[in-house]
Length: 568
Image (cartoon, rainbow, N blue to C red; front, top):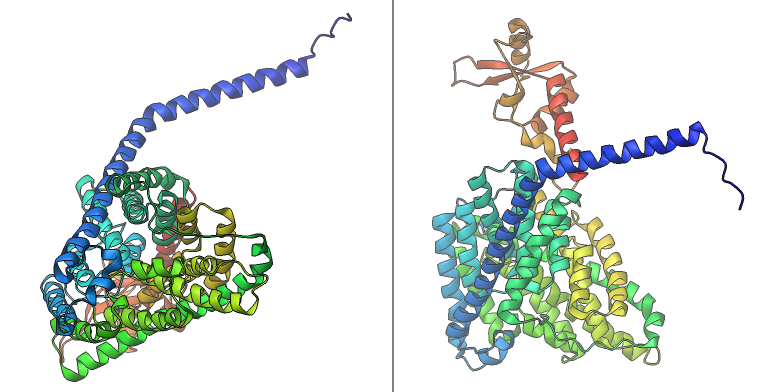
């Protein structure tokens, strides 16, 4: 055997460099493990506890609705509530939602500043603007109001209130450990993930819902604790209800499924329009409710009772609108409804949800969007299978795809909604049908509203989160915290300040940089005087000046911090 030639100096140098680099990486890894490992494990343990607490909150919320609903309507099975309602005298069907509305209105009047139920939109706002915190007092009151509403005839969903209740828990923990912004948002995501996974027995979808809808980014540092919390929420659900899905689906996919893909594309467009109709109906009804309340000088605590009366009258003939509606959703997914029933129930459910939300009775839009989507898909499938019977599969497959498509468009969560539906079935062919419908429904709906129901809600309150951090970061900083006071080394000249005030150019110290930037653009000034106007006949009080350079620096730092968090 020939003798191997000796390695030259270049090869030896290369190997030596590789060994040195490897040892350096090992030392760095050991340093990270030693100094950051314990704190990271501690945070994961806190995330686990938050997940358990949020999962228990979701469980208690669900059990509370079942107990109260069983007492009020003498119902043994909440999913088949409409069957028991038909045995109740008509005047009780009307009176129960009115009494529930009165109790709801009284709770919200006493424990909130504006009589408004806190929802997922407030959780998203808390994540973006308030370091992952939400209002605790108003949040607990909203949870109580939502339980009463869903137990006494309200036509909304339980997942939205549960998400906000979980956010209240994470906010309390954040205050306890004095969490900073990044930690607060991560814990908020943990709580939301656990609440959603506990509601649907869907850990993957719960984790992605928190990232996609609430945090609105997929940062690696947030993924592990959120997954831990989501799994904890699922375990809580399975300990209480077993390893069962929310819906039992007899989905039968056939070889003709692939030929039907164009039909699912059409279904996606239809579902997008239905989702927009649902959202706009809610907003229109809310505007009408505000107008009527102002016109009649109705006390705000009476508004939910009036909405409850309308719901009660509808429920005399159509008890399917009462409560969460999972019984009707299951009937749609199993094909137990006729075509005309699916169409009528869709219209009635949209009207009932709009009345409930406009009446400020409480609840969320998650479950209603699932029900409306399943009914829409069933109706579409009934038409499609009758027109093309030779190349059509099951109507229930259309119902399932429609459920995902409408819900995804309303929530602005195509990824997590698709996974929720997939976790309900475990069938990849079903997953493909849902993905096709979801993609077109969300693409269409997001252009007709501000991306989702929640972000449109915030836009209506002048909270601009839909366009991203560049649109809302300026609103986070008060002028008084960025301005230069009169004692600053590089303060503005007093004569220049007075000259600008005489021209009407000044800004209040409590205004935000969002208010200030248009003034800079319009006047092209280096600074804007900061002053408070005195009483009539008295000169204004000058506090300092806001320099454009300082405002831009603050904005740039905020953008950099946000980008660093989202990519860490």
